[in-house]
Image (cartoon, rainbow, N blue to C red):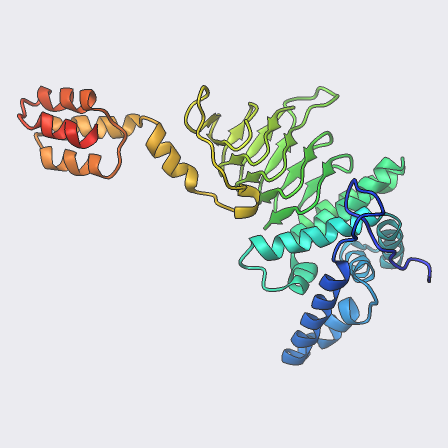
Length: 347
């Protein structure tokens, strides 16, 4: 077998006797898509030939594409091609992770029209694959090269992942711009992370200081998770949240500072895996059903004081969390005789 050619890979943390991943199937689909696109758009024919159709395997195509994306006037594409190809080919788990990431993007992002589209154009996917190589170099104590590669990834893709950070497979960096992941961060399998997410530390202290993200987690756009906190399996972090606490499995944290939906003692739990379902908004309903909203109470007090009983009833009919005693008292304060009817509707 020629040097650098793929040997059948094994999944991450598995033995070589297990069934290899479906790299050949995915690679065949990528070539089919590239042929189709070259025929339908002749302007891309040369590009598709050089990046996909001229290569004999997925890892060769990926190494070529990354090498040309990340090269500079002093860091040559041929050097990077050899680096990527040799590293990926020597560790079957890396290729298994690449295939899982391709499938994740295709399954979870409705804007991803094909595997080839992801391979060529998704900077989150490309940044993640390049990081896997830099992490491998870091673990081999080739740290100057790992850091140089890390710098190029940050410059080209606007994704800053420290080479020491550990990332599982089936990862989706959706949009990816502005993602920052610190040195001691750990990310499990089947995790989805949107743009402008930070997994950072809380100061200048050394040691284990970054978040640990469990399998199947969804982290919304602009969320910040700081410190050595644990985000449990299947948890959901709402967009724009600032998380400074552990988040139990299958729960949702939202806000700044983030709080658990449903409360700390009995947080609301969901059954689905948000990292795969990409459900960003169900927590809004949970908040509505489980949390008293001060603003809504103030609004209702104002309506009651104005004697607008029908509007109050309509307001509560939309699902404002309340109790008979709360709104009964409000309506009684207005001298309205329909408080009992109101209480029955919101009890």
